[in-house]
Image (cartoon, rainbow, N blue to C red; front, side, top):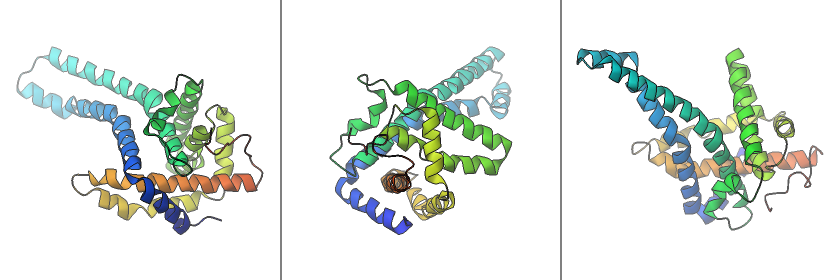
Length: 247
């Protein structure tokens, strides 16, 4: 049985040895995964109804407005494609880095693990992560609460992929569901316990968020380790399927 205090203590022990490298990985992940969507969002806002009214006030031609709207649409589509084919695999690589560094010296390049040309698992990661996002959105459209519940049920999928990138989508969903059975409220409370740290991260124009992010990531890595141990103890899986990130 895991406790918030224990996994946070374990996370702090890992942080004390590798903080600056962990900071670099989490910062690059946040920047790369958010940069395209930020640009797209900015352009979309710029071409909103209010912005169009402002442009018309200054007698800007409709052709320019149409061009701006087209750019916004292209960037919006590009943002979705970037999220599917780049940001989602990066999440798996980030999780793999934070799990491996608990066990052994780990290179920064582990963040880009899903993109390795020497392996044939990139498309499997993309597909599984896409299905995870799609199912979460569909459940949220049905009702908000089921969407939240499902997001917690799918919480371990990026870690499972990080540990076994060739695992089938069906099995990844099954494992995550079984790992989080009876744990969703505990994980939710763990998330709530970071509110103070999140507020602290808003200091200095949100730059502080980069410095507290490694603590979050290290803690969630410890959470997955606890869920993994539970799965082993209950016979849900074994080391033939989850190899403990040594490979």
